Length: 134
Image (tube, rainbow, N blue to C red; front, side, top):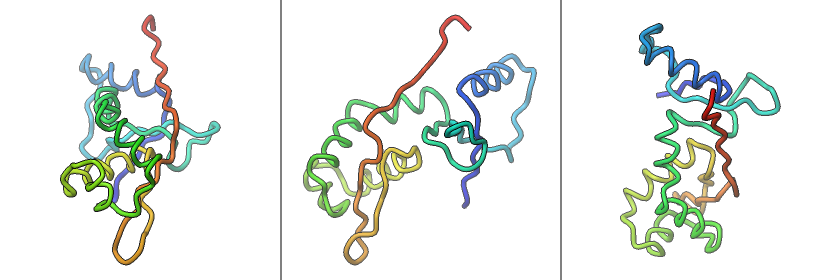
């Protein structure tokens, strides 16, 4: 299944979400569910930051997942299996987490030797900007 993305700023996402919450707008099931921040003003293609909601972004950047990202960056495992051995996490659960991190643009899964996928951290910092008074 091809994932559809909507490119928009955090403010546009906020306005969209509030309109839905107020009942001013209904969400069509065919509409994209993943939002991307535009890169350098571009409204095309995938952006750097992708999230389904602010809560999903916070959950994705949990303490456990940030430790996982540090492990990938420092140990540079050659496969998901090697990373599972380093972290003590189940390979299947680790694979699911890595695919979520990859969809968000935080990790890249490169083709390794044979059928292996090598996780590579693609971002060092993530910044959230939320206007609490708007």
